[in-house]
Image (cartoon, rainbow, N blue to C red):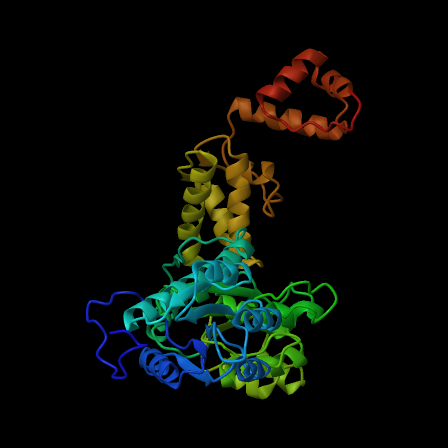
Length: 473
């Protein structure tokens, strides 16, 4: 039934299938009290927060104290020009979506409204289904805009599924904890050395949560410049500081309905800690340069390689924020304390990088596996991953040997070579040693090897020995 004709609110069509997100802040500006009440009852029934204004002047006054996701604006109110009110709204809140409504609007007026920044135009009378469908379109449009920004900023990040590779009892216990805490809304603090996989654990929690359909937004607290950190988190409005030429979303808004992950949270300043605490407690944020509040419907996960309790004792981290973030604490052990995972991780990374490089790598020789397993891995899983990637890039056969460890210049290159050498491999290593000894001078190297310079060049090419172009030939 048309909202503009019947003053009785009926039941929404049960066949309505448009998806509706809750907790939108909606401002209805209309001098018709029935339209206001009808919109409020329909929209609040579907989880939205509705504020009413009887005139454009009253609506603009509300905009000075609150941010709205959507404004329904009557085009023809007594004594007011709806298009002028629209222009003032877009000047105050460029990102706010405005849908114009009118009983006597023409196509020309609707086109003019869209040119001035209106999202769409609805003619009165409109039904509940029409109203809700339009709200759904607005929501999808806003979500797409934020997702585009999120994807643009995360284009270089790895988006693959969070698979925790392990055989060790310690990690199996952590996987059980993740399975228990993931479906809840509680905050989680992940602790452990750098490179142990805290980010992987955070993503796994997100993928197993009720928010898995929403975005997973990561904040690297160690790499952001402190002067722009607040803007990165909360966004900013146009003109709030030098260089702020447009209003911008922050990480909190990008993570709406999803998970916000603070990596190495011990690096944030006490000033930002205070604002973060306020956002966690009130579930609202304000953009830099703006006092209006925006809902922050996010789940927080934090990670640190520092002892936050010691940081609290030294006055470097707020105690109240620590308690807010440390509701559930999960400690991820270093790789040296779970060496039974190393062979499994090695094979996993060999398969991944081998596939990427188009190489078939079947595994490692016994001595190479022994060397990698016994190494203490100060950089943990991240160091192991980087090492395997380098090995795959330089691999010349299906089996990686200790010679490959030396050839790829890994951290294990100083280990003694123990694999049995074929005659061809001995020749390659001998030529490499002589070329290195002569500092790349091929004439001297050929003389020491007892061969001519042309033969040396052929053997260097055959064995794929790196040449130093800066040395004389």
